[in-house]
Image (cartoon, rainbow, N blue to C red; front, side, top):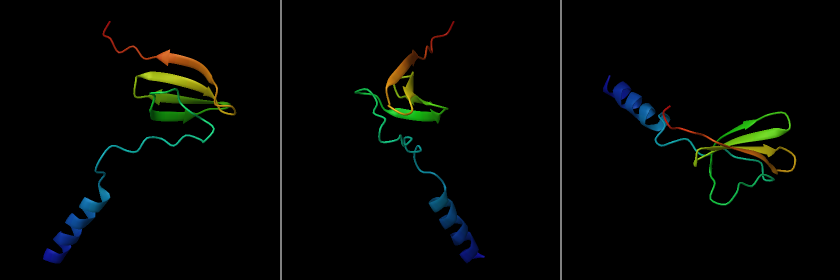
Length: 78
């Protein structure tokens, strides 16, 4: 019973996430503007949407990596 409890604790320690998940991996052809870091990414048909740590959504061309659109996320209460 003690061995089972120790095994259970060991499994919980090794399997539970410790920190925040790693930033998404973008294709090599995609480079974000200076100072921007990806928090999340969505891959569409011909485009990639990247949510940045600066609360913006960048819409990039999937083939060239060119910035198509920049959307600022407004978090103020209305």
